[in-house]
Image (cartoon, rainbow, N blue to C red; front, side, top):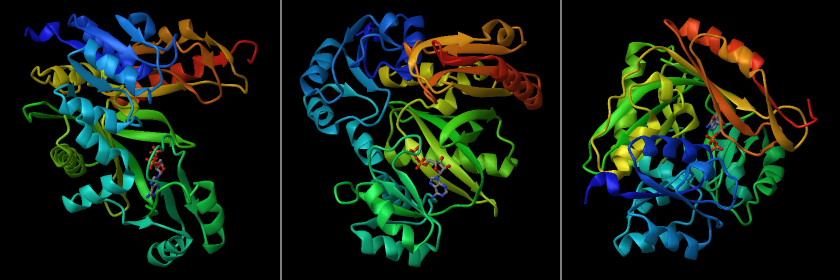
Length: 387
Ligand code: ADP
């Protein structure tokens, strides 16, 4: 089969799905999405849209029948139906096997540890007693995490003392949810490395990005990260080893902590293009989205080199209202050289919702940073009437 004739199915039609389609379309692929929201960001550019919930197994099977390869834009989806489809010969990347391990933070860390990839110390939590034991083992504070379903820090609680144990256990629904505890890492920096693995095992690793979060939501990625050459090489090498450990196919993002004593620990792995990789659209020869498409259809991977220093900043919903999204300051922001704007096209804005991002390139990282931060001051998204 001519590879460009392959039809691609994406579970999820949010911004990541949309940016995958924009790249897929450049190469002429036919794309079908599955998403419960009719006017989701990817809707207007997909060739077909199956409007269904992510846990609708019949709809996922329908998607499988319509396409030649399935991928997904987020990891919290039912793995059983994907396994069943894979057994019947459908192509799904990243593979359900790697997804299953990554979906569970405890299993993910266990595999990394087994492969001798450094991670924060962690234990499995079966009951409240175990949380007290975690306090004795790690000291306070430490972090209690839900093994499944967490994003943007939802699903994590910092336990500051034995008096917090009960509330933390209840807050995370410990009686119904699987939990793990992790030592608190006093990190100096958070960095992430995007990496991609082809069906044939070829691996491509991207430059290291330095991330800043606010209230657990990513706000800024600077590339290249301001870390030593030794740490940069170590981080890229670790990302390569992570790809082999999970036998991943497609784009992955490896989030890491750089500690005071210059150690790198892996925080978590996402089996998909990632917010901290958006810089690659303007910053790298091959963006994370194009790379993902190349990988899952079996094309050679592209050059990951950085073209110039790049800074990405997220554009979050402002104000306190929910309503029709209104974008302000576009003209002023785009007057700044090197600035590019991405608006996801979500109909509604609400406080802290990821509505878009902007990227600035420059001759130096300082120049890119100044441009990006200035543009961020102009661009604001509010719900109508909420400014
Ligand atoms: P999510 O899956 O919701 O993104 P993470 O487990 O990656 O959650 O944690 C979100 C943020 O919490 C991280 O970016 C980091 O800032 C902080 N964090 C997570 N684990 C630890 C840890 N062991 N020590 C210190 N901070 C942590």
